[in-house]
Length: 575
Image 1 (cartoon, helix red, strand yellow):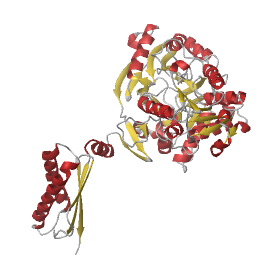
Image 2 (cartoon, rainbow, N blue to C red):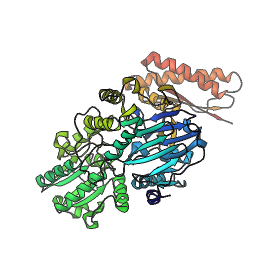
Image 3 (cartoon, one colour):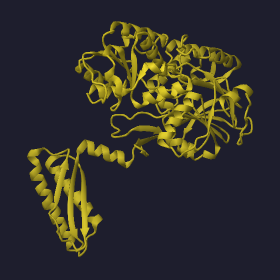
């Protein structure tokens, strides 16, 4: 059923697996997103009914060598897949939808989300899981959908991406309100404000639990309106009339893209989109009616040289210093279409996500080295956040007036600060809960308590291969990166005769002045081990490899005090 039918009928759909009313406790189980930025995923469980809200990814930390994404471990849900009624998605940011291409085909349940969010998920599935046919259900703010024992009421919220929603989750024990990612922007670009009225009405009726966005709890006051960026853009366009303008922002920040299009049109400039995610997101938003831009304003990347510098705007990815993004390739002089110089002004219209500070700093330094003017300082007002600051969080707490409170979506210090804020606004300390991933908040008719935990963790995605966070591949990569590697190649007949000289190669741990002597000693040691093994009449390949590994490791330590990976390569040849 699509959003239009839902909006007209507001039919309350009851699915199989409904628990006996009042016979069970409500269990709230975060599988990601608490104590970290990203990987948002929460499970609600009542009796035999489960619903999962969001399923996002997190970008890898510096020590996760070669890893593309980190996604939540949803094995707890997989084991109860027959009870999972649906996945509900609040909005289309990567930290809320990025894991779905890996998780959804395994769970194979319906997905409920707004039109733009479903479009973004569909694009991801086409790329990563083209054979899978999802069951999408479009919803709109104001719709009510019943899933087993749960009734979801969707609430419009303003964020840095269109079509975001919070929700009221009505259960037999009471109402859970989740704000989603939000801010209280009174003048949003698309006119879709956060629905104060619904949140207040829910508070008037009584709210059992509030789960609220903690990202900007350390910022005082109110988060500025997105329209402030539009005024700053006009000033920059006016100031740099004779230069090409390159603007980097999040590919999902379609409100920002809309403002760039509007200002470019007023200043008679063409716009070129750079970066696959930027091109795809703008195309999707135009198709669905979330972005309005005249076709004549846009030019293809291969046509940039046909447009004078002072008549062109480049809208690109790379605001977070992502290694292969448009802006980073430009800063390295490796971009196919844009070569930066003193004729360019580059605007980085974003603040670094925690963990990306070094990447962004390196990118900015390279941009300056290209001769560009670079605008990136927060005080220049070229970026505003999509998350509520302290006063907005206080307002939400004041109008919802929950019995219990759980801060979500933030690093641990954010959760602690938000917990304190809730207590300052009148929520009793005994009714506020600092959850971490895997914790189980169990709510009954007369109390709430953290009661145990469930299996949780992180799954690393390397290309299309997934593995555990502490799995063998990651440990091998760490060992190689820290200590280097020494390979020993031995070619033997099956009765132990050396058919080729022993060959040794090392990378990453030997200085040149000691390499020759050590390699000679290693070869001599290995030859003696082969001779000893040959006396037994036949070669046990695994036993010989183990002995080589042990003896060579001892030898290397005496020379270098290093602990490289020792890799014997034994080839047995029948002669």
